[in-house]
Length: 196
Length: 329
Image 1 (cartoon, rainbow over the protein chains, first blue to last red):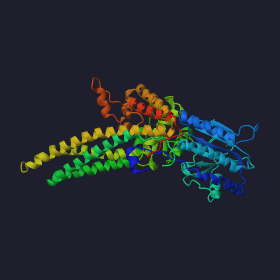
Image 2 (spheres, chains in turn blue, orange):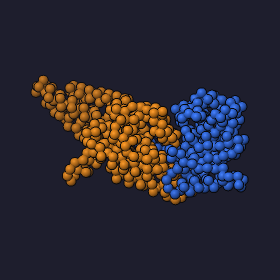
Image 3 (cartoon, rainbow over the protein chains, first blue to last red):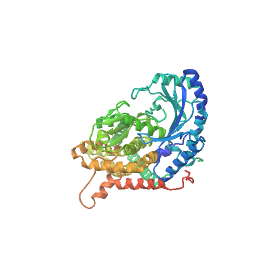
Image 4 (spheres, helix red, strand yellow):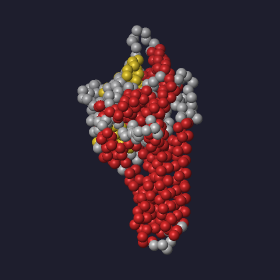
């Protein structure tokens, strides 16, 4: 924030950074090679729904768009919409494990639709889920406003505990492929995130 | 800016805030001119008084700014809580900070039944967001309303309101001290001087009078500025959550809750008033002119004013034309 914004008590809405999302497919390959974690094929976009008609219209548009390019009639809807306990909407897109680039394209479609409608500042984060043979869970969370990723690994079967060792290991592995959030205070937990 | 945006800046508020700060600056310049005039009259005791007032005033303002987080937390009896202790509260703050792209402040809870919240700290790295037990438990706020309150407080942090208000009140602190010092020196120093300097006998009352005037004017201007900062925080908070309705209903609920609480509690909370989400103590006077007087001295705008502004934002958000958004110039 500039000095004028401070003086006048203004906050400029922060626009999301979208491009780094496309680094995910190659990072997924790297991750699998190093740790055995495979993509589950599920990914989600989380945003803050605005009140009022215009936002509702856009949200509808997005869903129609995603369902349209599914193209497999009878295969069931790959897109789910859920609202979490914090009031954020999650659009969950499900694909096969090896379709990481299709998934990322889907997620990007949601982003672009919201940004084009003027709701870019509403985007919170996007999340792509991974799991390994021991059913350990891991997700890479993309922070739109920072343009950075961070790992989030809830310990299975226990409430509100994170596997920090695994998270830091992933940070080391992906440090060269993805822009990892360096400020650990911003690695906020997303307990019970849909698709995780 | 190429990116479409739906945020329209509130020019009216900016203009009013500029005017207030300009007037404060004007008072400051006039005050400095007065002091220089007195100094150039080269009267030692007057010079010493001014010097001491500036040192004391500046020093105390700096200390209160530097330790604002600790002072406010201690005054409210609040305790910092970890994410494990208050997962829901931390969860809301985490998400709002990620949306707004700002560092997360520390989170504290004050064991007061009065529903309220405040944010303080000299910069965003050292800021604390504090909510009272009453806000979390007794005020039956929904999750979205609580989020509206927290977004308002985070906007105070983002706007650096503690810093801005400290700098704005610096002048009033120095002027207030000058009145006091000049008064004492008149009482205790008057006899010693004798009748050898008639200029000196005039000088000290002049400092006193000038300072009192500066103090009164800047006090009113600071209160006015504080009310504008509240409106700005309401606005930014509502735009961050995109849910002005929730903030409106939270405001209504919290101020109703305030009225239900016994007076003794409120008096104890008075020093923290300027930081609070809604003021804990209202300057209500009986009689005809009472209402406008309390509006003039109040640190917060009236509930009606705040709701009126939020309704405006609400209308902007429901406007059709998402495909043809306005851009910020």
